[in-house]
Image (cartoon, rainbow over all chains, first blue to last red; front, side, top):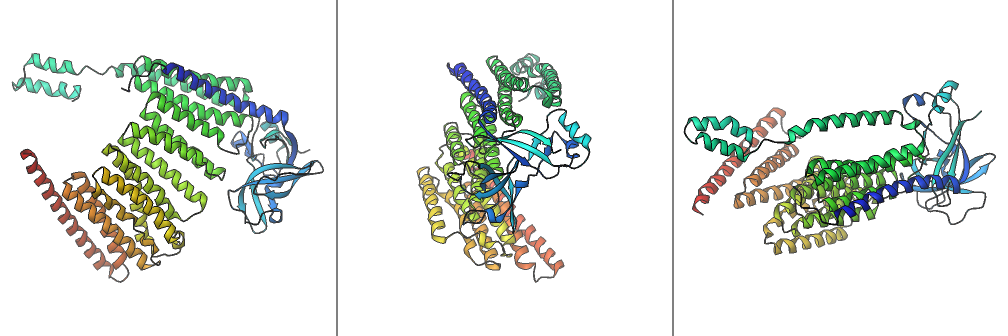
Length: 177
Length: 408
């Protein structure tokens, strides 16, 4: 048997549970805020295998900006695996492409460009493989079937909201016509 | 003594006239039948109902509207805390704490599921750190060992995710875990909690070493700092439990060096700048010695023999032999002290470690040039002889302890 609980125990429990519930609501609010205040960029993926959808509720996405030439690396020190990086994106037509990669958050970028955070997944001789944690798209109900019906490998266009404070989220994903 | 034992044995005692039937009933009355068994059926039933609800929700999770999903998460969170509180007040401690623990797990799950729901990307561990903080607060609030262990595990998961996935080390999480849980253990000394916390802190130290890309031997500065915490603890069993994992880690490391030390390919991962390493380790050693002196246990300083930096010797055979010397120094003094203290557990441990070291030494030093049949024959004879001798010593020690005791 544990020691008897102190008299103000109930108040502390209430406080703690309320704090936990508020925290979860705050996570949800962060999701909404990212959409409302974020700037939308469109990214193109490499072809997605529709069979992936059969195995779970998400698809693995591989973006054109997932693989960047090592020449974009702006630092003197060599990039390390699992290191956090800041990728500067610039619009090229409708889509955004990576133009520079920093180890520290760049102070200022031109108005048409935007910073997306990521991690170095692998380092090759000529290129860097960057992971953005945007690689898993949880397919909304019904959408998966539609993708499967098309029955061939296709690229996808993914709209990503990037909030001014750096938070990013996928807001929409569609098959490129 | 259990009631079951009494029920089966006491009729014989009555038969043999040791006790009479009335005394038998009185004895049985001292051990009322367990009431928990009766409460088990409703518990199992509600568990099944809960599982069916869970699978129903999980199967349709993606199809539910976002607000409903949020509502389900929040209400099950609040529900399990409320139920836990209810059972605790009714005096059903284990079920109550179990439900509070479930609430804690649901909190972690809710953080992950909600961020997944909004396709949010975690750039840092703020979300998961909140989980560890909530776990710590619950540990203090309910003074529960189970919650303490959960908190250690959660903070290990948080730090592991941070280093593995996000490529960062959260010093705040490590310090927070060490201070809050360390303080809890300090005030409520406990052997099991000591070991669990020690393993958790070793894990964090290991992650820090891998994150900083420094020589792996720096790990032992952290490990011995944890060991030293055990020295300062006034409750001896709790302190000893805290010291077990760091010593085990140091022993296994040395054993590994003795076995694979010859390869030499990784020896450059072992050697930090000599002066800095020795200064840091020496500082911890001094702290440990002061504590041992204060608590009157200077004999325990022989544990530090395992930390002799034999790995500064050049790779190859010298390194392996240096590791063996360190191992022998440690196990030898361990055995010697165990015999002096006449501590049977220590004698057994010392014997096993000594024989293990001898087996490694023999394998290492003679495998290369000795005929294989002769190798196994001699090795077998050596180990048998050694174990016979050590067991005889142990038997003598314990016998003299048994004859000493009645007199004192």
